[in-house]
Image (cartoon, rainbow, N blue to C red; front, top):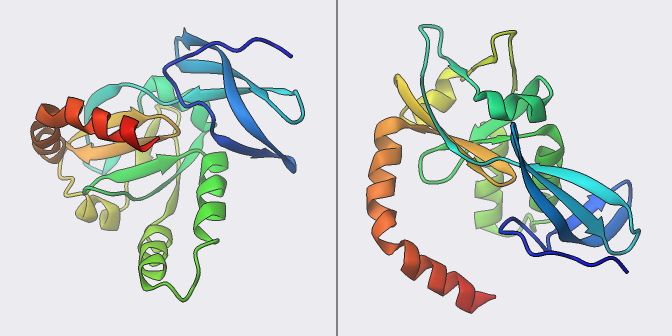
Length: 194
């Protein structure tokens, strides 16, 4: 059995690839020019998989057509397109196609008899669009998503592990000012949960 190393990145995450369920363990973690590369071991099959994690904070502006420049660190992982939908806390969530399929799988297991599950699924899926990157790395944010996230011009794109988020700059700064003072308290609560 190979030895495993700790890395401050997602570990112990459920993983499904080609019908092989297994527990993921981070074997090695290193920074790449385009993000963070994790070399992982799938316990059941022993196969190795490479996972890129979105990290960082980038500030941009919308152009006159409502397009953003996707950070160059994220473009290679997106393979020319991504899924964009309503996020939480008044931001937008961006997913690779494979991570979008993971989200779909999780949400379709919610019981239809649960009102909160139906409401969340409706908002999450009805707002979703497939965005394509042009040669300059730009993607159009549709008007309904710009309105939801209160995006007018200045934006912040942040990497959040398996997804990235797009925020109106003023909304992001307001959110940061609210939660930064309680960062340590939040961490302590989360550690006590698991």
